[in-house]
Amino acid sequence: MNNRRDFLKNAGALTLGGLILPQLTRAEELFGPTASRPIGIQLFTLFRQMNEDPRGTLQQIAATGYKEVESAFNTRGGYYGYKAKEFKALVGDLGMTWRAHHAGGAPRRPRQTPPGSMTGTAGAGAPTPGAQANPMPMNMPPMLNLRDNYQQLVDEATEGGLSYLVCSSTPVSTVEEINKSIEVFQKTGEAAKKAGIGFAYHNHSTEFDAVEGGKTPYELILSQTDKDLVKMELDLAWATKAGKDPVELFKGQPGRFPLWHIKDIKSDLKTITEVGNGVVDFKHIFEAAKIAGLKYIFVEQDMAPGIENVQTSYKNLTKVLA
Image (cartoon, rainbow, N blue to C red; front, side, top):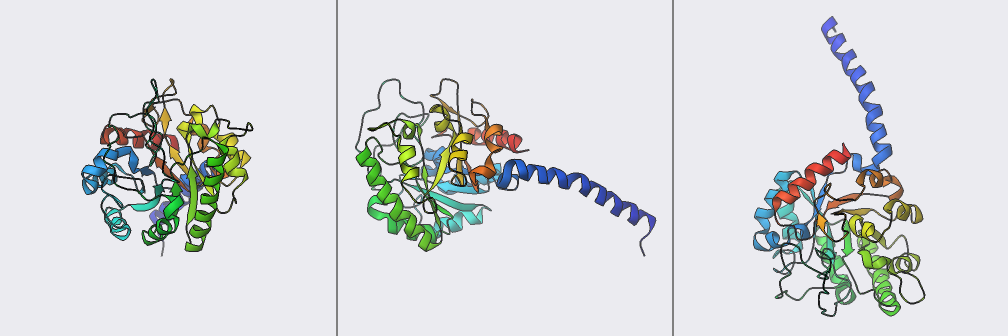
């Protein structure tokens, strides 16, 4: 039989539940999947550390609170020196999930870094302008790319239990380059769908620069690929640098942005910094998570100096999502 104390205890729980549930519902309305989605990290953030000590670096990442990881190119070959199944097991043993992997779309022609270029690189798997605290090594091993190896990359992503294979970058300076990339994206998207995983393209600021005909690579890629096969991983800092409001981008292609790079940039629009220490309006952007179709978020600070930067970003992002 319930006594008075049990009754009051249960009544209190119901009352508390009545207070909490509307708040949770409101959080879901505002943030969609992010209300309960773990915070992930793009491992290009700790490029040097992951190449020197993958296991030790992942342990530090897990200890910070990150629950999901997105891998990128590295100097060890494969997946930081591991095969896909081995890397999945390593990440899983640390209480995290290997969620996505970055692969280049096509080999890039070497080019010089122009004076006054961006502080920080163009993104995971894209050794383009600049260097932050850790310069890009010149002795990179041969890397698979989607143009030549898309089926192998899809197969390995499946072996690793990934949710998404992502094109980190690809040449988009001309209409010809864009059209070739679109062909690669379509083939990769079809192969990925057949394998039961998703495929997405990760942008930089250059995708918003007009090419011949006045169109931008961003417009051409989204208008000429199948929306069910080719999704987008929006990099919030690069979109901000290009003068674009991510929310308006979501409204233009609702449901097509399942992955985001949670990256911040300083007011000079050149220097990548920790989440919350720049000018990206994350609260405004997260309010449109449901419109975007958001599923996964990955903190990224291109080649950050150390684990303390990753810790700062995690702490600041948890405040944004609170």
